Length: 281
DNA sequence: CAAAAATGCTGAC
DNA sequence: TCAGCCTTTTTGT
Image (cartoon, rainbow, N blue to C red):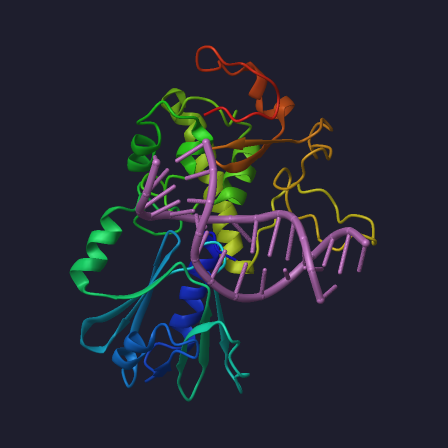
């Protein structure tokens, strides 16, 4: 669920169906009782998404901040809502719709100042209209860390997760381990455009399907193949047929096609040029 | 059934 | 660098 496109999709759905409604809130699991009491009885005035963060504004400047983390989920029901799961942390109900929130890494009430402070720490979000490619380029290329690692830093660019980074780097044919500061502006423009397209289409359709992804696999396989390299270690690259590589970088799996993306031609930082599939700091 | 994996991030070492 | 958080879905026996 949770890369930027999912969050923006939730925001769009909530703006369409929930803004202007008065809600009652409770916390079936119990942990958010206090927040639920504050929210209960208030009208929802607006919803906004920035990167992977979601902000609901209620009457009297009561603001709800949600971050789904790895496990979080938001479900909404426009007709009769089912009983919430045991793990449901927050339920928001109106006559028009009901929300169930489970497993978020953050769900808290914020003051306007608290929200502003949080947002100040977020980088450019390709899905936001006011996003500036110039600022995104400046922030992304401000260090020597591998490009792929910089892309997941939400303070540089907000909303990109492991799937979008792998697929966008593949579409732009960029070597993931290139030192970020060595990224040329025109290469960045290609990358930015790829990220925007993936996120925008994903927000519209509810899931990401990379252009050029291999055709659906044999009927025997359960999971649809929607990506070119993400999660496809050892399978053929849809562009050149070479085997897709999976390696660990900063505790996340990084997927790429070494042949298409020139991974092997990238200068390794100093000494270590160790083996394949190894973490490179 | 049990086990594993997952799109994320933080804080402690 | 690593464990921990925390839930749902998918995979394997």
